[in-house]
Structure formats: structure tokens, C-alpha cells
Image (tube, rainbow, N blue to C red; front, side, top):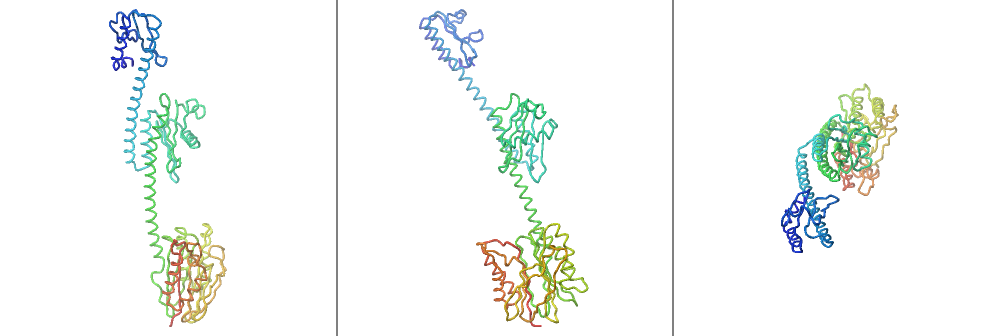
Length: 506
């Protein structure tokens, strides 16, 4: 490095030499390792110098200044001062070389990180991203081994290590857990690794990988020659940050695909569920019938059904399974099927018998999942123009006789699936010309406005009284419109289903 200083500062050294020669010296020169690097005027004169002062840089002697012809104290002091200045120039030159080398290395590393970021974009799976991360980090940080772990519920945990089988998987998971508990980089020496984990390695660094702010993965590097420096750890962290962005993008892509799949399945389930409801309303002499169903989500737990067979009375039912979404939809299909089969195929069906037999079929299934279903089953007797009904915990059911005030028909037994044996009994109401029966689900009376106020039974009763003179379709439309207006600005909380049966002229 002294040679480099002489090359760049030769004019200054020549000026120093001229100053010494003017002061009476015979020769001046710079020596290193027993050889002259520069001399004025003749190096042979410097073989036996009058004064020689070492050039020391950080306790290293890199050369010396020699002088011939002067050996007094002022000359010694001056030569010593000049040797210190030369030492400082050498030190600055070494620092510049080190900085240049570091900048070149940093540039190479930044380029490598950029190339890594570009290559990571083409990985479409978590496994490919982790594998690329492991090998690129080992290459850039210059370690001889490494591992990566990834835990993402509900996915299977992933562990990769190189060289394969270098360490026991349980040990690597233990190292990861220790790092995760610290929530920062973990640096271990060979002694600690062998004493606590039985791992033979020169050193180890485990770095957390945070995805969406949570540490769910970690990268381990071991056997770094000369140990891990702060720049090594910073470089590894920069690479990991790039990989975490890619992992988050892959997770988002997977989640988006899963959402599309679920939405497609829900759309299909909605179509299937709507097909389970009657596609046409029965035409029965003396009755005006309307029915509507509007799930709160794509699929729901409400249902209605009509069982109309020749030489048999009309049966109709409205039900509401507890819960929402897929679980409620599945149990809704089961409940509707059970009631339909009993009402359609029992020799002498009656609402209470249909309800009891359906409860027997459904009880075990409901009990296992902790759910239940309210249900109303009605049977229209054309000759007497009466409706015989059984009510298992269902509400609201509103009966409005012509010229009279509407009233609630309350249930006399708990919902299906609550008790092993149903205690439903038959009850009767007339359905002459103008009489109205509205069987709805609690999505009406429990509908809320933005102030969390419920629609309630009183509003329903008033609406039925006001609309009772209308046709059945108009009554249904009026109820839906009133609930929509009441809850405007707030999403529908629950499924809303109703059946309106009104006595008409025979």
C-alpha cells in the first residue's frame, strides 16, 4: 500500500526530499522490506542512513524514511513527523481500498438481490419460493449449509435443509422455536450448538420470516467461514424481505383461488337449494296462496314446501334451521325431506304425526351437531274449510280472520331435534273467504334497522291487519317491502321466508 501512496503522491515526496537537500542533507528516501521504493538523489547513499524513522500503521511497520547527512535532534523530530504523515496517507489509502472493495461487493450483492427478486416473481408455490430463497441466500452470504422452515395453518409444515440430512429435523425445529420465542435473529457458536443441541457446526444464524406481520417461517444458515458479520445478517434479512413479499403474494393468490372455488360452490349450492323449493304453487279450490324465500347469504336454513297429491289433503310446511350457511343448508334439506316424505307417504297423515315421526328421524343428527329446526306443518281440509296445524317452536305465525284482529298462533312444543319425543298437538283455525294465515320465519320480526331496533311482532300484526284485504301475493310483497324499508342501510341479518294462505271464494 506504501507503493500505491508513492505512486499517487510522488510530487509531494519529491518536494519533501528537495526541502531536506536544501537543509543540508545528502540524500532522502523511502524504504520497505529492505529495498528502496524512492530516493533522492542516489539510493546508494541511503544504505547507511544517518537517521531512519519507521512508518507505522496500526502497529504495523510498512516502511521507513531514511536520511543521510543530518542526525541532530531537530532533524529527527522533523523526520518523525513526516513519517507520521506518510503513515496517515497509507492508512487513508487502505481505507479507500477497503471501502472500494466493500462498495464493489455491495454492488454485486445488490445486483444479486435484484436478480433474486426478479426470479422469485416466477415462483408460483410456497415450496419453490422457499427452495429458491434457501439456495440464493447460502450463495450470497457464502455459507456451506442452511435450512428453512415454514408453518402455515391449515397447510402442512415445511422443512428443507441442505445438505440433506445434515441435522435432525427435530433439532432444526427446536432452533426455529427458540428464534421465534426471541422474535429476532439467533446467533449461536459451535460450542453452544454442540452442548445444547448435539450439532457439529462452526456457527449458526437463524433469521425470522414475517408474513403479514407474523413470524411463521425462519431461515437458518450455518458454517459461515470466519463467522457471521453484521453485513452478512443485513444481507440475509434483505433477501428474506424479498422472499416474504413473494410468499405473501402466493398466499393471496391461493386464497383468491380458494375464495373463487368456494363462491362457485356456494352459487351451485344456492341453485340446488332453490330447486328444492316448490317451483310452482299448488292450485287449490278455495285458497289463494303465495310463498317467498330470501336467504341472508347465498344459501340459508329456511324452507317452505307444499305436498299436494290427488285424493289427499293439501299439506304445507315452513321451517327454520338454526345457524346459517352450509351447515344450516344441509340440515334444511334433511328436515324438508323428512317432513315431505312423512306427509306424502303416511297412510293417514296428520300434522302432529308428521311432526313426531320427523323428529324421530332427525333427532340423532341434530343432537350430534348441536342444532335444531323450528317447523310449522299445516293441513287444509277442503270440506270444512279448516286448517289443522302443529307448531314445533316456530314463530311468527299470524292468523287474521275476516273482519277481526290478527293474532299470533304460538307453538306448543320445542323445535325439532331438542327432545327425543315431540309433544306437538293438532290445532285448528278456519279459512273461509277472506281469512288469512301468514307463516313466516324470524327473519321478519327480528330484522333490525341501523339503530339496532327490531321490527318486532307488533309491526307485523299491524301490517297483516292493514294488508289482509289484499290478495296473497300483495300481502307477501307488502311484508317484504316494509321490512326492507325498516332495515334500509343495514345488510339482511337472517333468512326471510313466508307462506301466505288466504281463503278465497270456492
